Image (cartoon, rainbow over all chains, first blue to last red; front, top):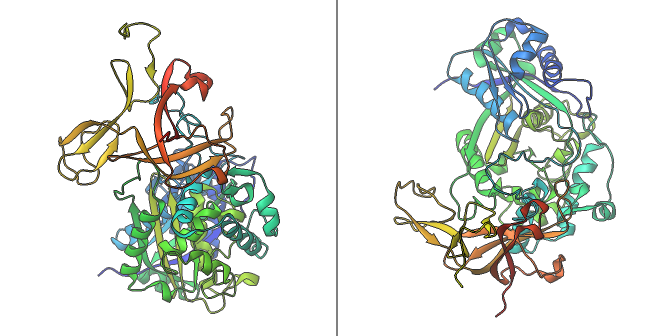
Length: 380
Length: 143
């Protein structure tokens, strides 16, 4: 049995618009914050795993800015699970015994507005609007309406996810938006893809987040135990075969598989969790994900939300950072930013949004294609 | 008079999974001989059971039921909105996505499991680059 891996430093930039910065510059800024958080220097790093969806060689270009020590760099891309995948690769490398101190960093420059898929030339005619829609708001609208189909979930219930997460973000100084959005305002905002209105779509922002992962032995040698966070489990899944998956991405089955992998590895279950950061790329995704992660029984996600159990102060607070809906969603950075949020609570350093007494937390991200990563973290 | 398939005016499929047999368009499918998984389009390997070279080319059904949908009000720049993006389970197996026509793009007008038919029309009615290409659409079942 290989030794445990710990997070000894972690931080993120406040998500927003960094018009004049390149992805390597954003990654470098986050990496330096994470190094400072651990009181380590770039000379202490033995490897880098860098997540970015839009550009190549961001990890090396980052080191060119903060210290060219010649260490191995691997650039990772896995859609919206990119940052979490980079984190997991760093964890694997330490578990394998190759290194003791590794940087995982995620960065992205998104620009504003809707993500538009590049036409790869495989289709004779552009397919969007001809053969239905493949926009992300539409894909996740269908995830929500599949839940409506099974359980009668309403537009208002999905909209309440946005109300909750936007409220949480008012307590998070690192969120892009820190603004209350009452239910009437969420419902009245522009309809994008029914039932997702504009305020039910995550914000495309620029950002970066970074974590320093460390072997248990080296953590003790460095005397970093007091703020260390143990990685109890890392689960990664690709989309298993399901009947409609190739036509209608099945985001739930892949999430359930990754969650089960992580729970089994940790020897824990949903009842052991004190908080969750899950992939609320659209408000329609959060309620099904309560069920996918086992926070409640199937069909009870909307009731869990409406009883306030997933709000700060509730039984199992979800997305107290403000989530992707309000904190923002820079694809490659999101997975590590979610880990930053949970780790900050486990350290008792989350300020006004602190989940009291948090000891164990879970992070979940899912990228269409599909990749789902779930991590379970514990206060050391 | 038989259709002249070599004529420049004969329609071209707007997607690789649309076949033309004697001028009649249909949805191409593939079914695994071992596990019966049914797919839209041609395949050589089964994604469900992994069997190789056991995929049979089949013609998918022309009727089905609406499994899921969304009403798209904002899409990529230049795409005509609103439209109904529909997920249809075809009778006999296979699932396909497409636009649901002849239905108001409002929640009240759409029911899960409503019976629909597959129709083929010129893609130019949905996208300006589609003129001359044959595309599949759905319409409410005529009975």
